[in-house]
Length: 384
Image (cartoon, rainbow, N blue to C red; front, side):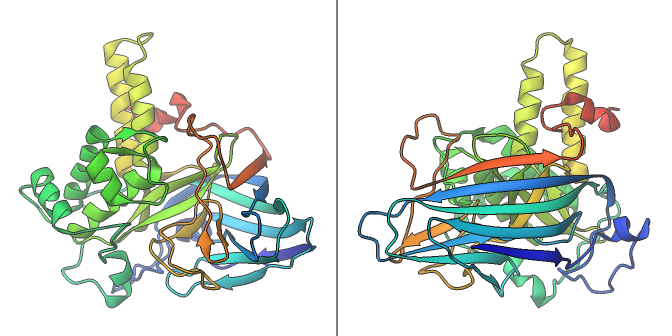
């Protein structure tokens, strides 16, 4: 069965829509439009094919797939779903806590793999916040609407005494400014090792703190935890890298920095790029240092590439319709067989051999798009 959702329009980026600054709310609002330089739009045809295999004898297989939404530098022009071999129409619902949308499927007594195909047409812009630390004004008290972005989440964005003690060592003399947050990002860069084999796959700040390694969601949940302890609202945003790779899923860190609104940071990919530069002996030491400084200048200023499509935001929430338990994050899909979650696959892990489900993907852009975490030429605007 083929289900088509057309004309999905929910929000916009302020600067993209007006060509200038938006009116800043007197009281911080998590729904505020971002004050951002939106540029270089690219339109993609996105095709995702999920093959989900439940254990033999499963009575009911349930699958939830994120449905991306228009807003913050992206426009979803259409989205459609079809299934094979069983025809299933998805239920499209939004969970109430963060507003994430999901297409959910129910397969009764499935035999073999169930295939779900998603086709999306989306236009994505590059976003540059150009954050000036002198302009960031953090309120003494945040409105209650930000509570979900400042809470302690065991197993996800945890903020217990272990994190408080570590933060005291990172920022012993807090200044109450965004500079404290920048110091946290730099500590995570210096202290963690990117590792697909030893990763939580579920945005665990605890894993990152204890193991000092992990993948993007571990990095960014740890940054989010420290940000919350500094008093800032933070969240993990999951989406898709729109270029070929083992697994298309990738997440970002977002922090609410008035007057800019939600600002995006990619600590893990910045680290990987800066380390490749550091190890490149074809350049002089001065050239390497200039590029590494540019990496972190871009990170600190707030940047999101036009080859990443946001799908969900937030951690530790109920799906819609409800699953048997809350989820920390949904990377590409979430599935349960008779109420038990199917294990998360990581095709980027070279030691992984068994997968309960896998994603095949194809992304077709209307023009050539450089990967800013590979193409060093994209750092030119930040070289000083």
